[in-house]
Length: 396
Image (cartoon, rainbow, N blue to C red; front, side):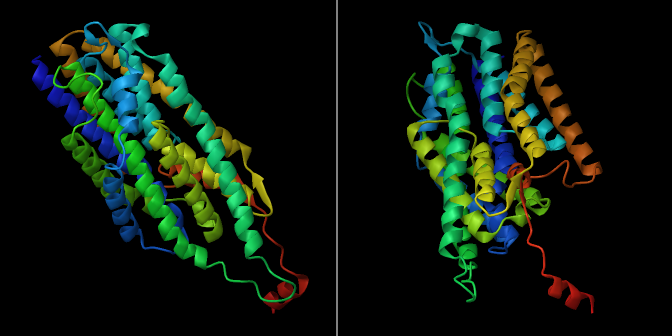
C-alpha cells in the first residue's frame, strides 16, 4: 500500500480513537455536579467539550513522551512502521469498545499504550520498546497518581467537613456552597483531561508522521495535529459523554457536594501536574482514586472491597489485553495489503456488532456505568438512624 495513503489512514484511525476517548472518559468530569444539581446535564457536557478543546493547546509534553520516548529510534529512524501503528490503534479501539459494552472499568490511555507496545513487539521486536519510559512515565504514574489524588481528596473532605460542622446545638452551616464550587472544580478536571488525553493521540499522529518520513525525529506535534485532536476529543465528549452521564447508576448520586469538590480538585491537580511532567497517566484511574478517597474522608464510610477488586482487575487487564489485540492485528498486517484490509474490516465489524448489541441490551448499572461512578460505589456510607421519636411520628 502507498505510504502516504497508509499515513492518512492511520491519522484518521487515531482521530477516531480520540473521539472514542472523549465519550469513554470525559463525562466523568461532570458526573458529580450533575448528580448534586449544580449544573444541567446538557450544559455540563458542552462545557466539558469546550474545556477539552482548550486544554489540548496548553501542553505537548505527554505527546512528546509517546512520539519520541515510548518507541526507540534506531539508525534507520524510528523502529516502527505506519502499518504497525495502524495495528496498535486497532487493538486500542477494539478493547475500548469491548470494555464499554461489558461495563468493565478500563483506561483508554492504557488501551492505547498496550496496543502500540503489542504491535511494536510483533513488528520490530522487544528491543523496539523503551521499557525505561514505560516504567517511569506510564506504570509508576498509574500506581502513584491515584494514591496521591485519593489521599489529597481524603484530607480535603476531612477539612471541608471540619470547617462546616455543627457547633453545639446551633444550626449547621450550609454546605450547599460546595455545589457551586463544583462547577469550577469539574471544569478544571475537563481542562486537565484535554491537556493529558488529547495529547496521547497527538503523540500517535506525530509518531506516524515521523515513521513515514514526513516529520523529523524528536520534533513535537504540529499545530494542525493539536487542533484536530482537540476537536476530535471535544466532539466525542459532547456526543457520547451525554449518553454516559444520562445512564449513570447510583454511585456518584450518593456523593455530597463537599466530597465532590474535594475529589475534583485533587483529580485536576494530579492530572495537570502529570501533564506538565510528561506523565501519560489514566485520568479515569486518578478520578476514581479521588472519589474513593473523598468517600473515605466522610464519617461512617466503609469500603466495598468486591467493587474495588473489580475496578482493580479492569485496570490490570487493559494494558496486556489491548497489547494482545494489537499484536494479533500486527501479525495479520504482515500479510501485506490483504492483511491491512482484513484488520480494517474486522475492526469495523466488531465495533458495529458491539454497537448493535448495546442498542438491544438494556442500558443500566451493569453494562454502561461510568468508571468513576463505579468508584463511588466502592465506598459505603453508614447512614444515621432516626431517633425513636421521629420514627413514631412518621408512623402517625
